[in-house]
Length: 242
Image (cartoon, rainbow, N blue to C red; front, side):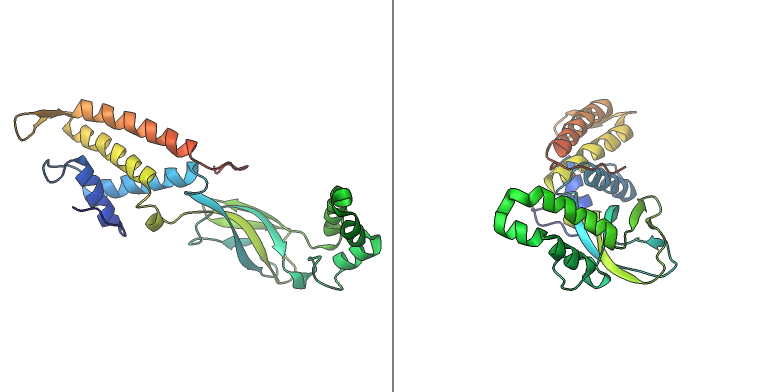
């Protein structure tokens, strides 16, 4: 099998088998077992590697009156951070004649920041946050990953449109060719294959043998090393996905 871009789970299975010695050696792992190994490896990669496995994103989301729970299945969202109302709901300092903009103008913050540069920046940011809390409709969001349900507090009394700040996991299709994911899949496939061979030794062409216990040991060493690399190559982040 010549190396090509992997675009399906079946091609990913073929890649793993080739790395284990197929077709020279009969790799005794079922397709279902390889599917589980690939799925688990991608799940662990998206959990522990921020930047390539998961990333921050923004989604336009409409809230409905008297509805507090929203099903986010199929969105690849793994956690929610904040919900900000759109400009039409009265929140942006860039929109003229909103309460926020008027308050900023009357307090002189816009003029001071313009004339004094960074001198009054910290004061301006504190005042902006206070004005935002005073005039804006505020909602808190809580995401339950097990059910993919996001809860909004307080329950909206009318319809709103806003921006949901969230964390998403990368799709499996975009991770089949990731070298860390591939290494993790191969290492775990070795462990599974070794379990199958642990009751006997496999004779190789030329007279050599393969012992299941030694394959398990090598697989576990490789799995430990690649998990360290996955965590070590993650970008800094201020959250933890449970």
